[in-house]
Length: 336
Image (cartoon, rainbow, N blue to C red; front, side):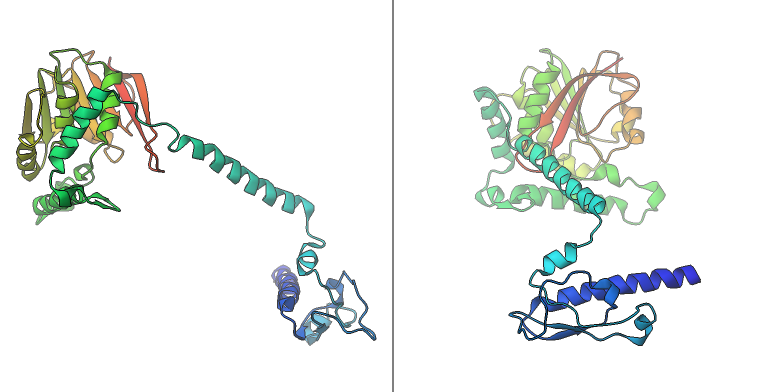
């Protein structure tokens, strides 16, 4: 109890002294309760002199008086910041300054990385990406931008949420999928860079796990039309219907595309030469590893924001300097 009371009184002294300094920022007379032991700096005598800013008088509380030998008029100071810093622990101040400097250096180091490099696409890749983007957001209102993305994307996400809620309605939490049904769309320029890093062979088969409305599946089929087939597997049947509708809206040359409704963890992926898993940071190994078990040795997997562990060898990493603070990283693995 004695120790706690001593700490309380020490804290009170510091707080009251800080109040005395803070109270002197206005050109008025103000009073502060403080023992003389806290008045350590005197810059101007008060006798026969009228200060230009303010006068602080000490009115000593009887409780504090027990801690102090006497009280007197606090000295005028025109340097409140100096008074605040006077007697401060130099080591503590240096530590605080070092922390601020470290934060600043870290931020400066990040800024050049953000937006300093863009996707480097060929003219052919840019043209194919444009065809897919225009196929999904073909109407003027769909192209309008919001904080969440284009209005077309916002509408597709709304439909995905409604479909997810309809599937989950009336079911127990332990019996439903949730996190793995989040809707997202990968940047197709990023997908093009991932495909280039994966180096698919003509005639190979690509499977898109969690294909949603089919944007990435159709993107892969358009960016690399030499696939023999691109298959999108989506759990929610309503989104498969939407994906088949978008297939006719993407014009120009593309590989054969097929959309299936089902749980990709239960699918036989032995025919796949290349697997794409879109933004998958929220997907657990429980969602993905069962699907990868049926992949043949040598098959490649492209992931966004998802690292794979034992049984897979990393062959390429693609950074996504998209020009904002939401950065993605792509990985290309081969199954051992």
